[in-house]
Image (cartoon, rainbow, N blue to C red; front, side, top):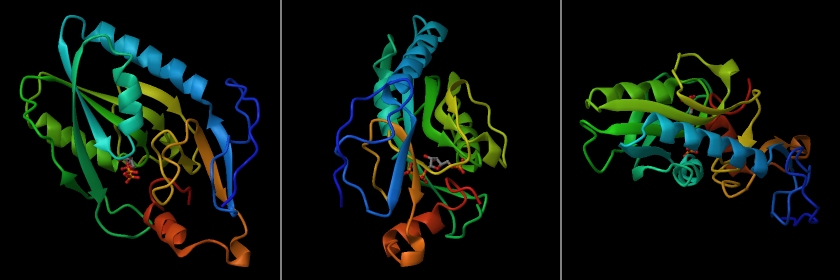
Length: 223
Ligand code: PRP
């Protein structure tokens, strides 16, 4: 593990190095979306949601685990009576290509019938997960169902998804931070970063990380 030297951040352009974030020696992280840019966009999305649902209550439904940070920031930019709920989903199978099937790992705690629901996701990739979740929630007859997504890797889409509140379109690169993980790590980075694994030829890539990369092959690694 290594602790990188702090550098003065430039919130608009990014700043190449992270401040004191332990990482594997084989990992190279570079900032794709600096925290200030994310904050500005999240504020805009919060204002739009507040306008669209003026005078009403909303239920923010976060998809665990990745969406938890986006949801907590977005919710604080929404000037409405808002409540939270969470669900979790997983793809069937371990292969690098999406099976197209999703299973619900954790369901909501309460009914959404007749309520204004905003489904909050960190990243939209193939679209398989969101398609499944939107169809499932629609069957429960909410008053309104909207989708908020921070990152869209449109290049990877195999199923169309309508997004109502989008943060950023991003290139097909493996991203971490602001809730997104690599082998469960880096979710707590304040910026969205691209992670690249170096030194693979030297065998320095840990088995845990290799397994995660295989598991996420269809989701976050361009193939
Ligand atoms: C990510 C993300 C979405 C899904 C998107 O979850 O949060 O749920 O992948 O991929 P898709 O569009 O190809 O279906 P992940 O499985 O990485 O779980 P996590 O949120 O716990 O990190």
